[in-house]
Length: 290
Image 1 (cartoon, one colour):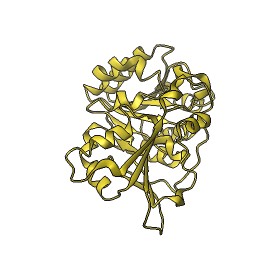
Image 2 (cartoon, one colour):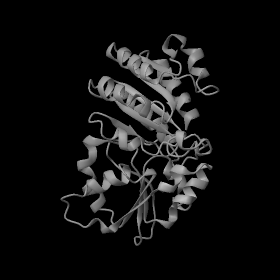
Image 3 (cartoon, helix red, strand yellow):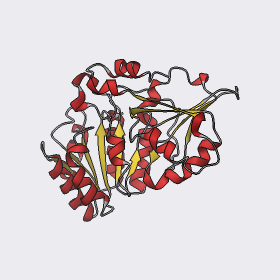
Image 4 (cartoon, one colour):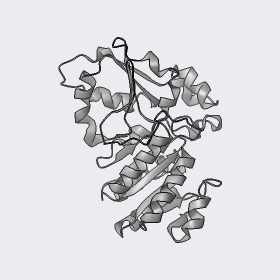
């Protein structure tokens, strides 16, 4: 997904001179094509994520759409105050790009596990979470964010994710995107966000498979109705259940005229937090292989 991100943002930057990219002294072997083509719109802020975010907010206030780029935990938790007060509060077009969401950097251990990032970002009232499930959804998310500049969080995988969509889909915030529909009308449907789509072993084993690439606080109210139309359903994410996507969806059922006992959640296990292993091993440990 990260290679798709760079390829797509370069294409978009060729026609939009206000796109800028700031990195926190990483991304080497990935970000160079952007830096070489747009040296006046590329900044290496060094290992100083708080400054990177403050700089991005300042540039955004002057008309730029700024993308800050780092390994998942570093552009989020390290600079949560700057995201909250400088970006989200002022409703500025800064996209925080987190590479290696979930346990994509599993072999580097808990310091690199992004398993609480949804919990942080979904409490920001103006923040739109963009969590693509495959490379084509990455392109779709980027195109939407450029056309609709706002505070946003783009969560990317990094492990050579395969495409489930045969073409770049049209996406809307809060609206489920159909990946597949089975002729078998019985059984359970599946809803995913982000790279957990890659854990689906057989899409035909579900009545239908959906993703939700764009979501956030302002979009919770419209989820209950979509859930009611698809029960029973399993919701999957590569994040802890506490404060995550499944919790967000369950919150949307409060006051709805159906019981959420027809909703099951597949999430990362608490045990994954203290385990150093490949992402696939950590998914298996958590029972996330679907």
